[in-house]
Length: 295
Image 1: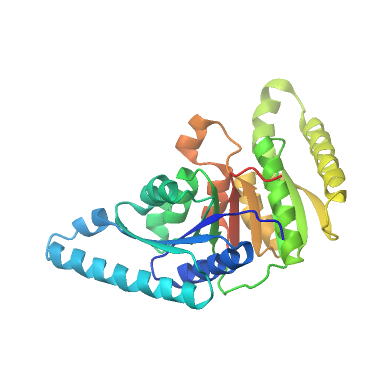
Image 2: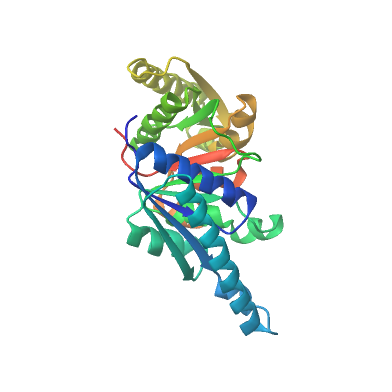
């Protein structure tokens, strides 16, 4: 098995999803014989909103964090991981994990569970997992499946014409080979964008369709050089941020989506978030957002 990761950081909060993320991290650390970091963040800003008994709340949160992180270390070591480092830190999980701990640990993969906050709050401020994806400089693996999955069956790989997308394609195929899974390579023709362009330039739908088919053909040729026997290709229509995590994921029964981190400009990403971040927000299965170089 090709060693794709050397230092894996798992973010935990004691939730069921975080437990699944830890199991995935342990499994990968053993498979790649690599270092495993486990972190728990005490969000003081969250607790400071409580005007009464703030000190007691903070102390209770610290004790809870110590208990959770100790149990996680024990689980990893009992599973056979020999190099385990734990972090109990204060701050905002969305920034402390990817910008501070991941850099100190030199992580090349961050694993985390999906958001543990309410739907309304997630809509307004974004989930912790989406925040980690936005700020990370390495691959981020978000666990969203409702059950612990030992092996993936259907891996949906989102592509466009960017180099980052080509990188995600390579990572997705490598994952499909390791998992002995089916790979579905999807390109979405951005019909809302076409509609806006057509208002000034006439009918460009056929041009986009032709370019999409040509792109899939390029990736089809690349797939033939891989060791993955079951690879299919699909052309979808709509907004990639919606179609990939919802329509395509449901159609192909995906249990893992692999996507590049970006796909929009820096200015637009600052305001709207990247395609990868949007997939994390909307998907109902696990998502791997790729930033590392995969050869």
